Structure formats: structure tokens, C-alpha cells
Image (tube, rainbow, N blue to C red; front, side, top):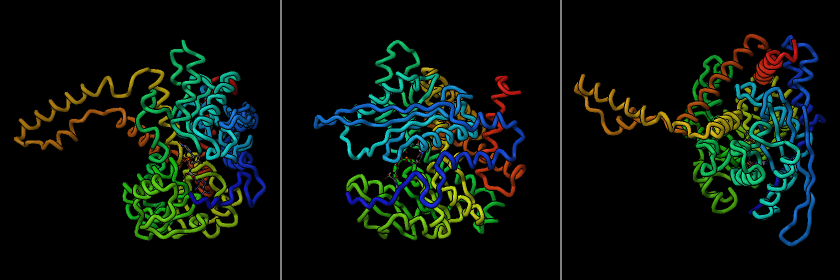
Length: 483
Ligand code: NAD
């Protein structure tokens, strides 16, 4: 695989603010528009607890290596806390606290009753074999168990950058082996494989949520008009950075929603075609060749960072933080910046972008689909029953009775396709996707309304933080912790 690694850093390259400071800056910008006492705001903002673990791992060649891992629980205002686990060389304490804080605000915004958390191990997964990664994941889980940083009612991890269902399965197995009589042990982690009590639709949930969020924003005629765009998603051009879980699924659903994906950017290079790229064909090409390079039906962009500056309606960063900086922000051509990744722009870039006529769909809102469906998975695990199991047949039988009554009354004969479409009872996939769509649509309009009412001169990010702060403050008040 050809490795053209673009320069990455999780300390902003062109401004000195750390990621956590950047999140807190957004918090403070929003706090100005609330009337909550300072003491309460400080309690909401601060990271409640963080655990740094170092542990040894035996490599396949017999050598021993020491690894660093973290788990931060940003807010205990609701339990359990919830947040992904990432494997990356860039993982550090500040990043994990920042991402845990974003989780708190995200959960509050979309009414998912969790506090925010995040975890990570500092490593490049490409440097380790599958069995080494398994040993690392199991050891990290053991450390979390020892320190009470995991459990169905304590803290529930999920996949994030550099991790997937496979790591979640190892986490579950390790947790279960140490708590064999715990009835709810399967709810200790989400994003599991379906065969291991995962939920249908979780793998694609974040990307699907990104699609629902962008589609919803594009339906607001007034907002599209002020950007000089026509309303609706069909025909809008999209450039996606990062073709992993979130990027691939966002690209796939946007294309199915008739947007035109003109650019796909990965670490090894980028692809561009003004008439659109076949997302599935690129995924198959990358699967087979280990790179998107040499894909025949698009032009290669040698340095993928240059692709961020392509002409397009919607730019979707779906890779890592700090990709848009004060240096490249003035050259972005997109009218909509859809933050699928967490913290894709530096604080200085944010300031520059705010001054432009650009719609920024903030990460706090746009990538909340993952945690929303994780919440559904957690509920399914606690209830020990698959969604749709109780009602589907009943619904289908009712639909059949109704269809035949309509046929009798009108003489019309439904085709077998119509019977399938109308008669079909909701299964788990339908229910999960419907719950996700509803969540993303409602949260968008709630955030947009707060923007209009409370901070019309600011951006949607500020509105998303105001919404979240108000909801967290309300739960502190309900708990009687603050007057
Ligand atoms: P992933 O590991 O599946 O994919 C990330 C992809 O980005 C990889 O293919 C990687 O090669 C690529 N990449 C990394 N740096 C790049 C660069 N500079 N330019 C182009 N490509 C680059 O990770 P993911 O789960 O898709 O997560 C992506 C982002 O979405 C992260 O910020 C993560 O925190 C956020 N997120 C993920 C989830 C989830 O459910 N997985 C939920 C919420 C937020």
C-alpha cells in the first residue's frame, strides 16, 4: 500500500489551543447566552474523572512493549457514561478529555440519557498483528474493569477511529469472563457484532445520521437561499475526507439520496470526478488493492489535503481532528461544512469560517447518529429482546386484514410488491433507522430554533452548545444538586 501520510497533529498546527481548550472555548461562547450560575457552568464544563493506564504487551516476537491508554468520563450528570474507544498514535490525555466532553454535549443535544466519555490507546494499529491487537484490547479492558471504568450502568464504550466490532467483541468477552453472573453484562459495550447481541444498523449509524443531518439542513429553503443554493439534496456535489466507517457510509447514503460524490480523500491520496464517483466501486477497489490509488474512473489527487479545497457544495471531513486550519480555511470552496469527524477544524479556522457565508453543521450534532443507535443497542441488551420481535407478526396480520378489506370494498387488487411494501411489519432495522431519522430531524430543528431565538449572529455550533448546556443544567436542577 502506498503510504502518503499527510501531516497530522492533534495539537492545532496554526493555533496554540489544545483540543480540550477548543471545546471549552465553544462552551464559553455558548454559556454567554445562558443565565445559569457560574458554579453550575463550571461543573458542566469540567472533566469529572480521567484514568491513565500503562500496561505491558508481549509482541509476537517475544519482546515486551509498554502501551499508554486513557479513559475519560467527562460528565456524571447521567449514568452510564458513553463514548468510543480509538486506536491512534495521536491519542493523548487532552484529546480524550476533549472527545469525552463532546460526547456529553452530543448526548444532551439528541436526548440520549448518558454522560460523555471517551477512551483510547496510543498506537498505530498497522504496526500490530491481529493477535497482538486482541491481547492489547483485552488487557486494556482488564485495566478498565479494575478501575471501575466499564460496566452497563457505569461506562459503556463503543467503536471509534481505528476500532470496530472486532475490538468490541473482545471487550465484551473479557468483561463477561470477569463478571460471569452479571445478567446485564452484554450491555457493557455497544457496536458489537450482531451475533453477539449487537443491533442491526449500528455499523452504518454514524454515516446514516450524517446523511439525515445534511439532508435535513438542505430542506430548509430560507437557509439554502441565503447560501445561494437550491433547496434539497439531489444534485449537490460532495467531497468526503476519510473513507473509513463514517466516511464510507456517509458517502454511500448521500449518493443514494442523489447527491453527487465528486471527491473521496484518504491518507494515500484522493479521487476526483466532476460527474460523480461510484462509492461502492471505490470501496471494492480499496478492499482489493489496499489503496484508492489507481482507481480507473477518477482523477488522482496526489496530496489528499489539496482535495479539501475542491469546488463543491458540501465538504464532509470524516477522518480526524484539525484538518481545516487557519492556513487552508480561506481556500475552502464548499458552502456547507458537514463535520462528520470530531473537531475537524482548529479554533482559528473556526473563527475564519464563521465570518464567511457558510453553513457549518457542527460535530456535536452531525455525528450523533452513532451514539443514538448505541443507545438503542444498550436498551435492547438490557431488555434482552430484539426490537420488533413482539409486534412484527401482529402488525403484518393487521395490515393483511386491512388490505383485503380495501380490496373487497374497492375491487382493486394490490400487486405482490404493494402487499410487501404496505403489509410489511417493522423489523429491528426499520425501527432503528426510523428512530435515528426522527432523532436527527428533531435535533436539527431544535438547534436551529435556538439559533434563531437566542444567538442569530453566531453559528449553529453555539446553538448546539446552548441546547446541550440548558438540558444538562435542567438535569442537575432536577437532581436537586443546584437550585
Ligand atoms: P475509521 O478508522 O473507520 O476511519 C477513518 C478513516 O480516515 C481511515 O480510513 C483513515 O485512513 C482516514 N484518514 C485518517 N487521516 C486522514 C487524513 N488526514 N486524510 C484522509 N483520510 C484520513 O474511523 P471512523 O469510525 O470512521 O471515525 C472517523 C471520525 O468520525 C472520527 O473523528 C471519529 O471520532 C468520528 N466518529 C466516529 C463514530 C463511529 O461510530 N465510528 C461516531 C462518532 C464520531
